[in-house]
Image (cartoon, rainbow, N blue to C red; front, side):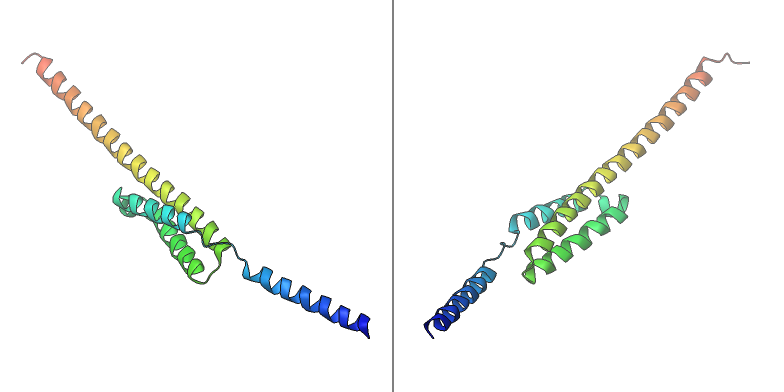
Length: 127
């Protein structure tokens, strides 16, 4: 009879230990969410919504999903989605910068071509 009581007590203790272990959770990745939000805001201010709409949409979507996961107390998916949102926002910002640089280079080429044509016209003798 005593052995049965000891077995019950051991099972009860194991159950309590497992229950308590289940209460210990990974903390919500607030820092990763904040970094992702800042990256998305920076990308928005850089003109990414107009110049890199696909990348920007992906960043916004993943940030929203990360925030929902954090609200649902799912820290691992929240952390992964926040990291992905951060990367997508950085890609959107870089793509926007590349688009602006490409446009500036094209304008410079057009201005140089116009200047060459003007120079050729002014150096040709009048007939």
